[in-house]
Length: 167
Image: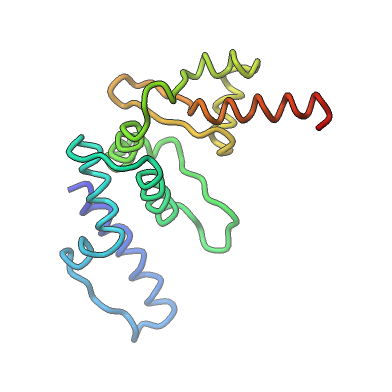
């Protein structure tokens, strides 16, 4: 159901765009055809990952999630896209968050408080960096907690040390 709603939402947007650009080129697609397309296949994989039915390499999971988010949130003529925090409270957002959470090992994740402590900044700064995509993060919908990817914290610390050393 979540997957079908997302497909229908994107299809509706596609229909609006095509009718403004070249209505004669519009091609009607069934829900089965949408499910069989690349977006439908990505959503199906992510739903299975979220349910714990399958495992995939982290890189493939993150690529599929990013592909879905780009399609949903990247405006025409923009340099980048922003995912509203409220999206993660929707059924689709929770499904993507769970798939992303399951792609990481617990040792790869750090709490917001711990990240702030390690980087010697406030928690609001961590949230701002997350919104700016300077820190990658994962939301655990079961506990309601958000975790920062340790690799990004380590990278920021390395950059800071290099800056201080004048490298």
